Amino acid sequence: MLETGSSYKKVIVADEETIQKIAEVSGDRNPIHLDEAYAKQSRFGKRIAHGLFCTNAISMILGNYLPGSGTILLSQTFQYVRPVYIGDSIEVSVTVTDCLPKDKYTLRTLCKNQKGETVLDGETTVKWEEADRRGD
Image (cartoon, rainbow, N blue to C red; front, side, top):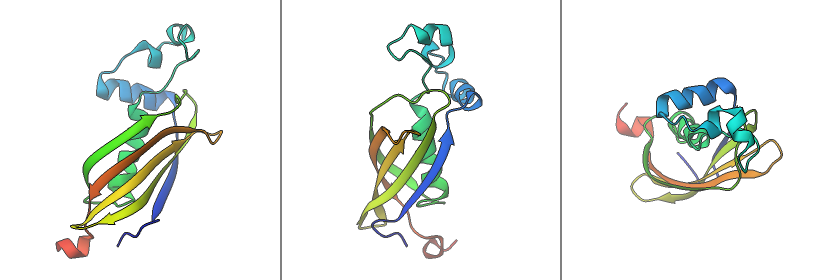
C-alpha cells in the first residue's frame, strides 16, 4: 500500500549510449543532442540530452519501483528548469504527495543533476492497485 511520503530515487547518467538510443527510438536527431560542433555554437555551449531522458527515467521508476507493476499513467506535467548535459548524473526521485480515491495517486517527480540543481520538476497522477487486490 502506498502512503503519502513514500518515495524512490535512482541515479542515471546521460551517457553517449543512452542518448544514441533515445535518438534512434524517438526519431529526434536534433543536432543539439548529437553534434558537438553544432551544440558548441548554441546557447548551451555543448550537447544536451533529449527531454525524454528524464521523462523516460521517471516512467521506468513508475512502472518498476514506485508504484510498480500495473501502474497506469493518467496525467503528467513537468517543467524543464535546466538542461541535462551529456555526462551528467541525474538523481530521479518520485514521491507520493496524495492518495486519492479509486487507487489513484499524485506523485512529485524531480530530477537533479550532480550539483544538486533541479533540471526537471513535475507532477504525475497514476492509477495503481496492489497485485493481491487485483487477483494476480
